[in-house]
Length: 221
Image (cartoon, rainbow, N blue to C red; front, side):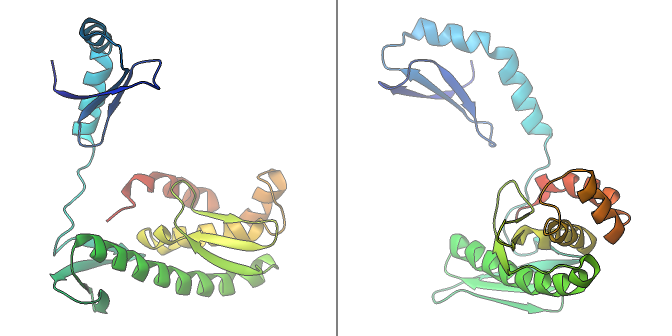
């Protein structure tokens, strides 16, 4: 039997098994659940546990957040230089080296994300300026966001939101999202007219779209 953390709760009515990305098991059960019921539940879940742990074991490992970590920046690869010391956090680029000074890892990650957000803002404005005349529409506002499941969005009021993590994919895919959201200023749906408009602006949009969908799992540092 694999080790697991057992959490009893008066509010629970059913048994629930969770496995986190590190492969650690957590079992949530009603307060009165007997050990025999827990054992039977785990036995019934044995195949699922094995499949899930195998899948996690085969998944690409996230490299440690440390000096030398490669960081995607559109079509470039930068290399992280970390320096932990007291004081405010700073981020500075020198060629292909990105130096981050902070008191600890949490503040270093926050400073790095803020730097990427600002870079995404500049890139987003520049690419919207490029594509807006081709589409024939321009947004009312541009917003840099950090959505977990969306690359971008276009509101009914004409605000285009771009995910800062677009800086972690090639520039051609950043351009795809910009063109996609600008076309939503004309067609606020994904019907045939929308895709025809996007194809007019970006004839190879389908190839870029497929490639972007493959990149989701890689977006972290």
